Amino acid sequence: MSLVYAGVCSHGPGITARADRANPELRDAFYTNLDKMRKDIVDSGAEALIVIAAEHFANFFMNNMPAYCIGMADEYEGPIEDPDWLKIPRTKVPGNAELSKRLITEVMKTADTAFSEEWKFDHGISVPLNFLTPKYDIPIIPMNINCQGPPLTPLNRVWAFGEAIRNACDAVPEKIALVGTGGISHWPATPDSGKINVEWDQEFMDRFQRNDKDAMLSYTDEETYRDAGQGGYEIRTLIATAAAAKGAKANVHFMEPIPIFATSCICAKFEL
Amino acid sequence: MSLYYTQKILYDLNRDTSIQHGYNNDLDNLLGNYTLTDEEVTALTKPDIGLLYVLGVNGQILMHFAAFHQIEWDDYLQAMRDGIEKYGPVREGVYAMTGSGNSFTEDTEVRS
Figure (cartoon, rainbow over the protein chains, first blue to last red):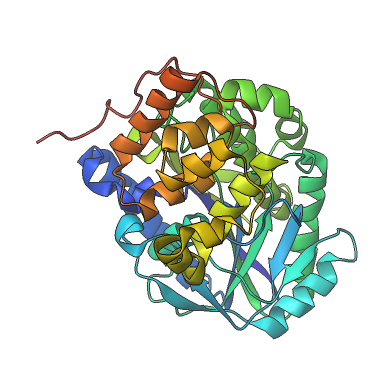
């Protein structure tokens, strides 16, 4: 069929773990927009949901760190975090190994990716799913871009990966939804947690909204680290999603800095 | 290379309940499986979150280790600041402190 939905959202663990400490108006508005994403995905008729995430050492370590990886299993589990800490119960999440295999095969025609037949979700996937598929009733195809352990894949390769994902979606008969999830500027899990460069975020999201490829790919990792922190490396997940949207513009439904959630929280949907 | 194994044991610990059992019940034996300096062994054993942070442990790994020890979020952030104060700047990696030890979580917090 094709890609029937493409959007992005934030995934910081504080979104669930420290929900009680956030400004209630901002938190509730963010949750409302996440629920709107959930409804849009349901209304799209999607038969599977791809999640492009920036995992945080739940599956991959520096002994064998793939730049890209796609899950290929009928079942996943998560979150790896203490459920009482993250405030998300540990559960099994359905996958679709056969669909994954077909998607991976198509992706590999134009981009390189690793694959994995086992995958433990961390907050990077579990937090979005907690809002987007709370009943875990749609197969998930997890995809990871290494945003943690340098050297990192260049942004132009991220774009190529996103285009390959779109081509793969267009090549299978199933209706596919795609959600990219990553932070914008943030300094997560450091003493600086909560520091947010709002101006940088607004500039990035302006480029993202316009789906301006050249502008998004113009960031260097040195600039991103300086201005947006090590968490800013996660723009890779957002850029890959923009590439998969094939030039479509995005509507940013929500964007507000919520320091206790450690980032500017976003919800956006591409007009495919 | 030693930082690699310090992070490796935490990576294993964060995702494997059998390693967690070993950490709680036979720590010396568990640590013996990794190439670690005395300083790293001390940091992992106490645990000394501040020292692990200064040694360069990636925050995404360290955050989970702190949660494993039931360390509250504010205490975790403060432990890293205290580590900087006691041991000096972060020695390796990309998780250096850039905010001069200030707290950035207060603006929208709801205080009862």
